[in-house]
Every structure is written in structure tokens, then in C-alpha cells.
Length: 137
Image (cartoon, rainbow, N blue to C red; front, side, top):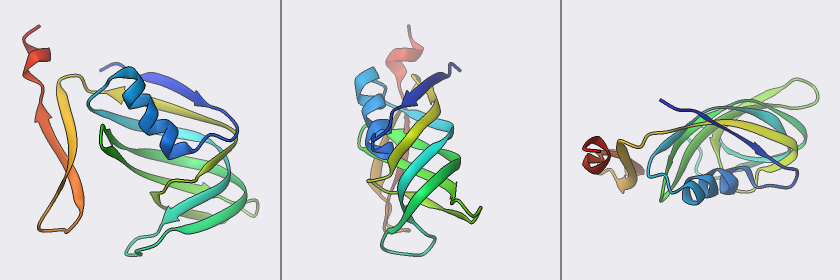
């Protein structure tokens, strides 16, 4: 497995930038296996909540990981505020990079990811398919 480091810049929308990396590199399946950096605003959906919570201020990204498909990302992160209080959950759009975000991507060329409605959960869930054209090369 190959890994690719990516650095985001101040003002970048964390989730949009991650989804853009997949499109720009024409990957069909990837994981963000780790991320660190800082934000000045985070939009996080806590477990069981239906809406995003906005957290503002000087925030440090402690962890960031998730799957990325052409139809979107499923990312979780934990962030700490200036007092050291930690918040974590599902990453929404609108998380703005303060100084930097350093991410490590792992593309999976032998797979194709999509998001499809799972009748058991009621959510758009990850569907994993093999990419036979890559295996036969």
C-alpha cells in the first residue's frame, strides 16, 4: 500500500479539500489514515445527534481518519480547544484550517468505493467493490 502526504493551507475547508484530493488524483477509493493540524472553526456531529455543532477558537486536530469515495467522505476527528477540552465526532463541511492540516492518504486502486442507502441503518453507507481492471494489469 502506498501512502501520500497532503498539506492543507489556512482557510481551506477540511472536508471539501479531502474530497477534492480524491477527484484531482482520480482515485476511486481511499482512506485518510491520519491527520493533524489546527482549525479556527470545526463543525462536528456528535454521536446520536442529527445536527452539527460548531466549535470556534484555536483548535488542534488530535486525530482525523476516515474513508473517501467519489460521492463523499466519512470522516471522524477529535479536536482540543485552548483549554485542552477535547471534542470528537463526525466531520462536517465548514471546518476551516487555521495554520495547517497535514494528512496521510492511502489510495486503494484495487477497490471502488461508493455510498449507498443501507436499509438496516437508514444511512448512506460505504459499499466496497473490487476493481478487476486494476488486478489484471
